[in-house]
Image (cartoon, rainbow, N blue to C red; front, side, top):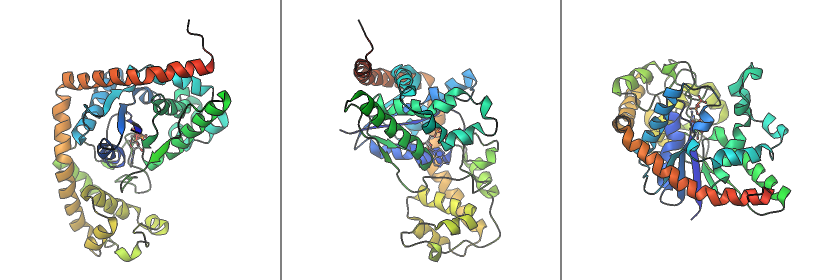
Length: 342
Ligand code: AQP
């Protein structure tokens, strides 16, 4: 069976974008693939994390995986630092990837901001570790949000260069799986920025553990304008929002996209239903839907986070299974590279 690898960083404030763009899509893949879902704590520390918080946040992402419906008996759920192969293979990839490749990564530029000199070197080589995450298991399919596509291209380049440099056909080709609608959920305060854990404004995101009142307040306060909601005639033939229309009303399209994704309906049907409505009516409907869909998941996450013994056991079992899969891959890589292991 083909193998899937994906991960989420335990950097706190797990939000609706992480759920709709990633975690929710992991669930049905369990039926078609051999899946590894990782809590990528090594990636998280590319930006300083409070050690106590990091442990809590690692359990939080694990709880979100479980509450969303990932079955720890079928999929492997584990945190990255338990399997040393990730860091070991990343070092080899640091020696395969080229500086020019990393210099083109837009996420580094975004995250490092203006003061690049102060960014950690870990943040810079982050894509090499991501390549190692996938290739330590020879995974072939990686479900990611659109924002991770560039990193995935780089992982493919690293796999190819390794194979070429050592004259082997060792690493497989990696395919991105961009699934479902609303692969890019935008901030509730600024429709031109993606919803993000690190946005200083809590009102910019719906957090997975938000209760009904918090969800309602954030949707009510979401930036909109006084115009009525657009109609389906604005959409193109494939039912997508043309770039120019999105640029004109990013907030409206974002909320409509969130509604469609939560309801599991095509955007066109949702747009047709609310065409010409006042935002107040639509926001109430969106609040009801969001509370109905996210409420039970948030409640289950809280229940699991109150039972850290169980969550840690899931991670330990997953770590044992992941280590067993990665060990022979790494041993072969070491042999290919020429490391003596007497
Ligand atoms: N706004 C988003 N819309 C859709 N998908 C998203 N993802 C993140 N934000 C959105 C997807 O969630 C997965 C896990 O993300 P991550 O934790 O590894 O890191 P990230 O992409 O850097 O996430 P954040 O939430 O935006 O955190 P910060 O603020 O730290 O940058 C990925 O598959 C991602 O595509």
